[in-house]
Length: 67
Image (cartoon, rainbow, N blue to C red; front, side):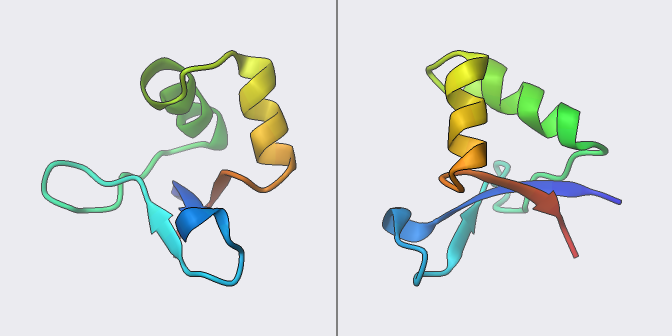
């Protein structure tokens, strides 16, 4: 299984999702949920692990199995 990081466009759940992309506009895939979470903590999220966990719990950011 591979995991991807996404969020709803403009934070509105009726909108589609946008994914973290690499330089070639491919979805960045992770081998585990924890690796995706670590990526967010170290590179994309300007907050602590508690804030990230709150965003994950509230659905602001999703880490999900990518199909």
